[in-house]
Length: 209
Image (cartoon, rainbow, N blue to C red):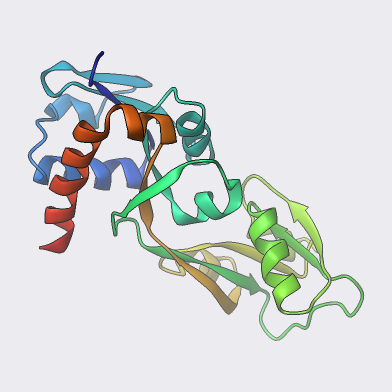
């Protein structure tokens, strides 16, 4: 039985910060790792394989067992609700989900429209507020929705707030703080527990410093 681990993670900021974290934890990831355009990266000397995926797809790969582990933002975990275990808050790629819109505007009295990439999270939030809203799912450029009259508000990730400001939008409410989490396939967790626990222990030591 092999103890090799396959880890799924998104490209971009999370990938960069996760690679730095793994290196600090003593994993020897080659320099060309950072600039590769490959979707599957092998690191045989560490018995590791990485799958680079869209952020929303990472929990899917882990749930179905094609990846033992994954690194996913809490926003994705809340939206996807996949059958995986959350092992560790890596405390990287910090941001938050917020409600935003044009300044000094009120939401429509009758089923206000909310544009978002996170329909489940948005629906749950407004239901908790006692508000009945119409959710419009978009896949990108969410800030455009209030500007063209498609939606009263948006629910989206906010990091620095710069994108909102540049598009003339303001933040109305913060929904939840987001960081990246280490997640695991339940079967892999049983079958490869020693190898996975070693990874978790090494990462925990770095995060705690």
